[in-house]
Amino acid sequence: MSHQSFQVVAMPFIITAECVGCGACQVTCPVDAIVEQGERFAITDECIECGACLGVCAVGAIEEQEEKSRDASSL
Ligand code: SF4
Ligand code: SF4
Image (tube, rainbow, N blue to C red; front, side, top):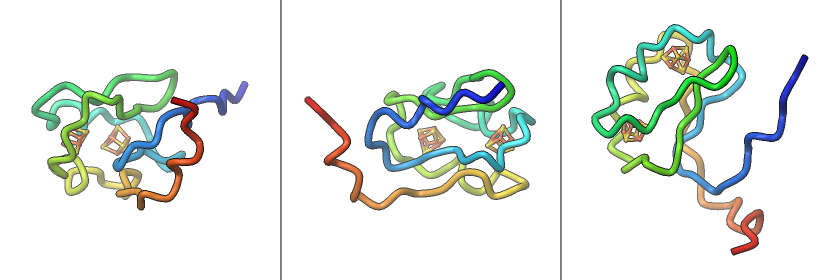
């Protein structure tokens, strides 16, 4: 069971498949932008790009994204 339809919006921070679902980043986020999504976590567009979550992930699953996926947006 793999859902791979999550890369929808161009967001500066992403949680990759490395995520082990520990939830540490979720409690760190000041704006509750990190939500549980199946067995992993994901960053929503509530993200204010503060970068706080980057340092707390023990497995390095949170990455800053370059602004190169803008063409994926249909808005
Ligand atoms: S960068 Fe900041 S606002 Fe965005 S998901 Fe991480 S902790 Fe939350
Ligand atoms: S801290 Fe890392 S491993 Fe833990 S839920 Fe967040 S992204 Fe996943």
